[in-house]
Image 1 (cartoon, rainbow, N blue to C red):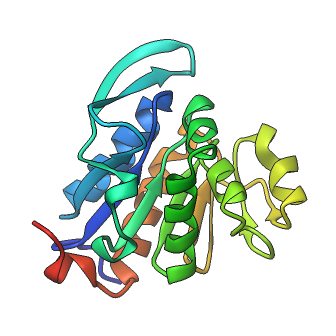
Image 2 (cartoon, rainbow, N blue to C red):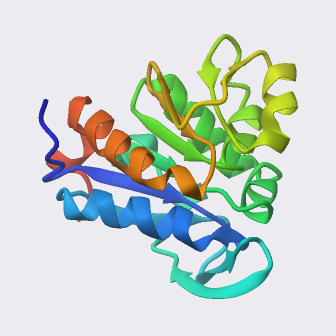
Amino acid sequence: MATTLDGRRVAVLAADGVERVELEQPRQALQDAGARTDVLSISEGEVQARENDLADAGTFAVDRLVGDASVDDYDALLLPGGTVNPDKLRTDAAAVAFVRDFVRSGKPVASICHGPWTLVEADVVRGRRLTSWPSLRTDLRNAGAEVVDEEVVTDGNLTTSRSPQDLPAFCARIVAEFARAPQAAGAGGRS
């Protein structure tokens, strides 16, 4: 199975409160495999990161507003967690529409820890097999998902993981899943 992501474009959707390691480590794995990543957000400037939801953990520069982005611009989507981050995203109509359209496009989407909250709001988990941080599992079940307690789960174009402890398996899986998907945006997307 190919694991190179040369020429692939990956959107990383995050808002203030993103768990630093859940954005940083998957993004680095994707870049190490050759992907180009853009941080999309609901506000311009920088996204404030957190460590364990409590401590300030620096910032990430925002490359583009999610409302100005198109699913056609990207080959894959990463939704990191942190409790506050997906809570902010799920209240933003442009972010929810982007996630909904991305999942429905069939392109790969990966989400870890609290990240699946945005998938719930986008109404794209019904009938899907997922995992997440334990406190979200009732929300996922109520939205129609089959919830399992596994390190990393792939169901069609959705890959989910439980927590930062699962990052090694999550990073390896998303590189493999993103590499298997047809390349579209990276071949001729914006530069």
